Picture 1 (spheres, rainbow, N blue to C red):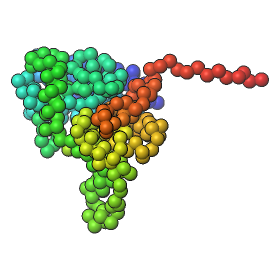
Picture 2: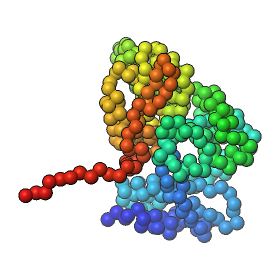
Picture 3: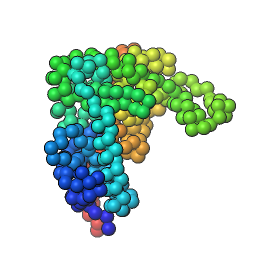
Picture 4: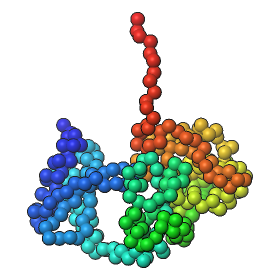
Length: 332
């Protein structure tokens, strides 16, 4: 029988140190709530007496998901302990030197859902944009392996002596420089992916079809594909695409990492709205969802606004409004 999450959390707290190296046996496991984008998670860390180093968090929610699939508590805890020690070694080898004087040259912007992240937004600088919020990340390093960054908190902003307006100004410039905007037709992305997975170029060329811009869907992201949804904030790029297509655009929030643009003549707004909500529900993990709404770019007014205002503001399936009450006839 699978344990409930509450029981699993207590078992992890009691047994986690048993799976760590000897020097951790007398460590003190601590569980605390950690605000992540779109989620409030339970993180477990182990404090060693007399050691003030940064310690990593292992998320019990992820461990429980693994436990539900595999049913073997010993395997789950062993794997989590290995990941924990890998994270400890990574921290010790790559301790970030946080000099807030570097923030203005390395701050970038991301988009998150405002309603889903209300609690997080209380402790970090942000700027509202429709039903979304611009938040800021401090890029600490970037290489072939990946990017290391942290969310800019109110405390970091104050330590750097910056205002939110200044953060936005620096981030607007840095984001475009560090993570250049990338816009490509959906079929191009599919072909690129197929070729990366081994499809011979000659076959890809035979399969490629020429489609009118108005009949294509366009992926808007950045060169890394990470937090690329913020690229839709660059109006000049949206205007170039709208001019190329020749119509206004619907913008569909595919995830935190990309949005999809299409001509408003491609399909009715109701269809586009259903497409977004269905994708969020069935194809996009909660941690990566951006919005349940569709946006509209007016190429003449050069303005991006919400095209829909769905009742389901949250991204985890919870509807903010009171549930509708249906009257039913009593059976006779």
